[in-house]
Picture 1 (cartoon, helix red, strand yellow):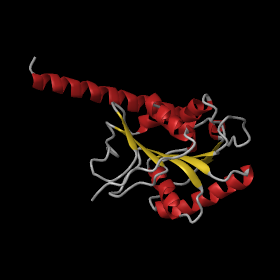
Picture 2 (spheres, rainbow, N blue to C red):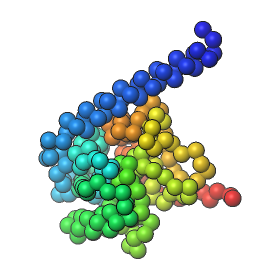
Picture 3 (cartoon, rainbow, N blue to C red):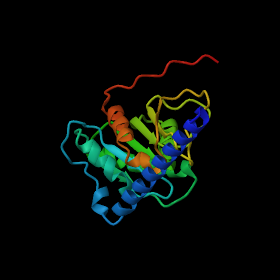
Amino acid sequence: MNGHETRRDGWSERLLRSVAGEVTALASVVGALPWRTLAADTLDADGCHPVPVVLVHGLLGDVTNFAPLRRHLARRGIRRFASFGYFPRLDYQRLACALQTHVESVLARTGAAQVDVVAHSLGGLVARYLLQTSEAPLVRRLVTLGTPYLAHANPPQELAVFAEEDALVPPPRDRARRRMTVIPGCGHFALLTDARALDATAHWLARPEFVRLPSRAA
């Protein structure tokens, strides 16, 4: 077997794993839809993480999409959740206004000074726009999962997680300044269930202070 055939076989194997992961993730997401209690707010829950976590789903997603992430974070003491749901639409700037109202209600209810946000796909655009435009520092940490990106720096509070085999939002190849991690052999929807993506989310939320990225020379 020559090198070309080896590379082709390796690529085929990665593709099959990615497709299998997407099918499994979609089955998990669809299976959770009837269980609305999986998305219930738990802002009064005890835990070692005092900052409430607001979850924002993608364009055609649902608040139950984060059930695996919630279980993963709960095992690490992060248990105070609130879900932000919305009807499908593309004008994320307008959705950001609704998200701000939701965040402010979470802060009023809990007495917290800031929230953390975890968002998937289009939900990340909504959350990022809120973080960049809000006059008040409402968001302490932001994790975006498979979120479309623009060719300029992300906010320093954001960790952008991408899937290597994501056909909808492939990992960026530009030189924009952003803190990011790429999950090998993973697809767009599998970011909601992949243990490596869930671990990256947990680690970023657990950090007490964010570290600004160094400036990149033009």
